[in-house]
Amino acid sequence: MIERAVDGVLIVGGGYAGVHTARSVRRAGRRSSIVDPSGRHDFVTRLAAVAGGTAPMTDSSAGLEEFADDVILGSVTAVRDGEVDLDDGTTLTADAIVVTAGAVPLKPPIPGIEHARPLRTEDDALNLRSAIEDHDAIVIVGGGATGVQLAGAIGAAHPAKTVTVVDGSDRLLVGMGDATGRDAERILRDRRVRLRLGDDVDEILPDGVSVAGEELVGLPIWAAGFTARADEFGLPTDDDGRVVVDRYLRVDGWTKTFAAGDIARHVTADGTELAMSAQIAVQAGEVAGRNAVRLLRGDRLDEARLAHRGWVLDLGGHRGLAEIGPVTLTAPFFDLLAPALHWAIDMKHLVETRGLAGLTDRPGA
Image (cartoon, rainbow, N blue to C red; front, side, top):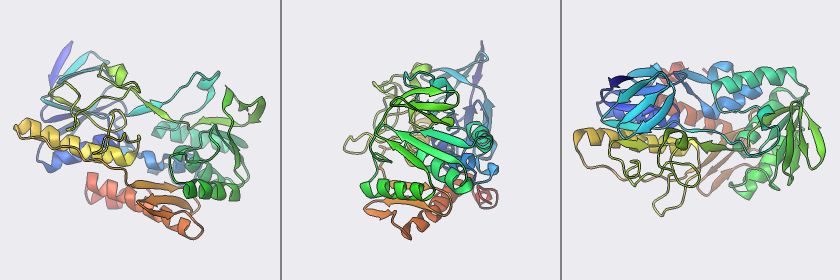
């Protein structure tokens, strides 16, 4: 075993929570190191557009060296308080660690689930982009944000292809407002996307999906949710596999290790559990990074005050959906504003984490 001490804050994972943790650490004047198997930050909010063909392939990721002081390539196998084991036998030690490794696609016990292609990483998006171009029909399992954005992008970029969205619920975008779900359906139907709602998937085939005894032919794509991977690392978790953290985002019962993003169970001030999303990951990463530096300095930690601020979805073809507090931008004409808002949020993320370089070397530049 090789032991390596890391100066400053060690961050596990280079997703949204990870790079915003690095940003928070940098602003506090300390050094950050990110350990990640790919060495790249995937722009998750852009992947559906990349895969569907409404955004260029360069929108999918950027090197983590642009966000952190040091990048350590490796896959994490275990996390202990103040220690991280890698698959090559190396143990990294640090006085402050933030685990942000995120989530992986949910794999329920559906026969043939291995045939469904996921959409979570840059490689997923680029592989899907190529596969979609080679297929005349596509079946997307999942009518949530990922599935709706992907279907919208494919419908806009490839109007001649047959696209079907399958979901066990009787509406799209469950968890968002009724108007948002209705207008998502309107936009997709305008693009001739077929909707198969209210029926669960029986089986996923190599070239289709079986639903209520009917086979829907097409490239099967899985967009029906994600699950935290904390149990793989030996972290204390809740029943859903998410890390249990205290009000400072420190791993429950530990002293040197924090968790932020999809991997952790985040709650609002009144205890309401927050969904896995990029916006929560950004907020949590900022708090975790700040508290990691406070821990190093021996200062009092800040309580996390996380809140859901709304949804902004880009469906491609200059159409989108947005819920910001009590305001919805989903109806005809207003749905033109959501893509611009989505772009502005992406730019804010890049400028915050990369500085002014984010304005010239960015998705969509």
